[in-house]
Image 1: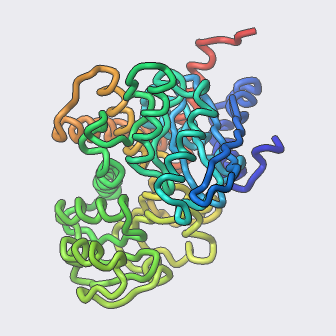
Image 2 (image 1 turned 120 degrees about the vertical axis):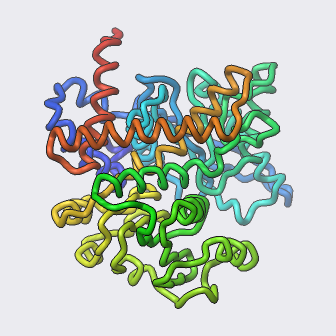
Image 3 (image 1 turned 45 degrees about the horizontal axis):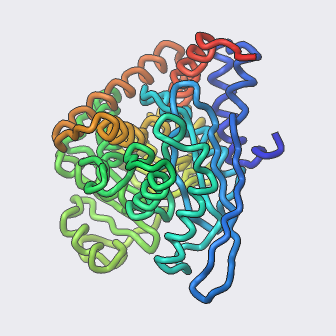
Length: 417
């Protein structure tokens, strides 16, 4: 698989293989589930503001659509590659299956630097990219969403471009839209809310209450800030938070609401007067009940894993723990909730938006949150019981659940030839 032999995809395969062996997955299904169904590469010519033509390279990968339409974000970044997009589409396959929602896995991206592009250039790029992949997307084919450097406005352009091509308004072609265009209440907070729910359920399993528990969070973007807010409201003591620039630590607990106000003004937690400065290295070494890496991938490695002292690690980010480091934490008795379970609430809320758009009737925020709570508890319990049944860590158990569901439907659908 030359097109997908990057290290990110290799890490996914390593996790897949361990679970597949436990399931005694037959060779034919194994082959199907380790190959992407469709990889699309497109050229997107755009006239820039200076009058020159630039041609951007875009990708859309539909890794597996056995359970339903492909689902996954679109990212704009100079480092986007087919390797990365394929690996992320594979992860979305397992994340949707773990969450028990009727979606397959997809992902898209365009190689560009959006920080150096005007609003008009971004709109032109978005519309051209969608026009190039339009035959492959749709409410029953592939439903994109926001990802790195994309947002509600870009999703609005996606929806409008698709709608103009098909001749009628189709809100369900994309999720993460503005509320006025068929977005869902509760979507913004969903991933952080899901992280909070699984942190609470993990604490129960390990033997302590989230109320009064100490928490350290790496990352104070959408996931980290919402997790901090909701955990504090649940009675947890958030003692340390770091972001891209710095961090703050207060053993008595940070005032999260004041920190949020500070970040709105300064765009960073660095310099907040409610505690002492702290680095990421020190944050990972704190003696806390719950550690939430909610920033970047490969943050907990064999270099710092031996010094992690948390009882529970909840992966708010995608791939924050390397496979070797995860095994080390598990062997030390640290309860690790993997990313494909911990942050699957984001795609679950996207599923809710898709359902509401197709139904033409929208739920209250309370209803969205209640349904999210039910789905996350269902997913957590399914993975936990699988972990106990097979005597494996939660990551392996999550892959067993996900692969088992996709494999079962693959067998039932049979081989088309």
